[in-house]
Length: 282
Image 1 (cartoon, rainbow, N blue to C red):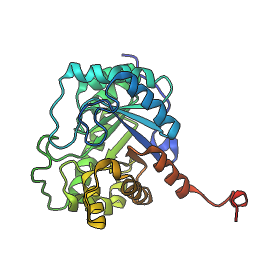
Image 2 (image 1 turned 45 degrees about the horizontal axis):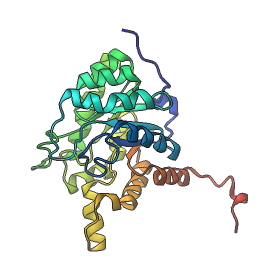
Image 3 (image 1 turned 120 degrees about the vertical axis):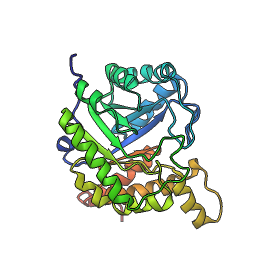
């Protein structure tokens, strides 16, 4: 099979430049934006908007992985994502958010160059097609992961798990490797905060770190404690961007976000060195 070759976005290639993975859910039931971009046309239009806002990668997913989400049949997931990936990959780097090997393979054939894999089981597909692979940690499945997550040492256990996955993928020949601690995937508030505090440790895996905190429930809990009122997902932009700032400052290479423009502004501020200060009005 002829390998698929696209622009390299590996850690070595980008020189640890920090970037943004934009979330594009082609689903009716994702926790924050389910149904907004469910048809192919609106999803493609949204993809162009995300790129214009400053996304480095557009992450297309056709099956919600929110806690308790219902499984999606293979044919339906393919119907949702393949036309979108085929079109957007003509202009941008696209990843596919899936844990089904058949979807990953078809998505790569349609133009995706990164497999964003919550199951951390698809390294062989990435190796076969010579594309990138994100190994994420999850305790349980989307249907069960939040029932009673438990760890003795969440940072150590997640590190060990991802270390094994990285070694496995390297043995298979995957070169563009990423690790994701899986914030909110089989973790409670305490676990999530411990992982964020331990990001420096996870960065010792020796591969780029992708983190997804965007609009997640633990941020809603923190925001509610601060404001005294419920804060639904669409109103968690400030909390999401604040969490991105922490992650970028503690070893994250890429943040997976809904709020692309705000995160791009954050990155611009974090990377500004004052060289153009003369252009700023007093």
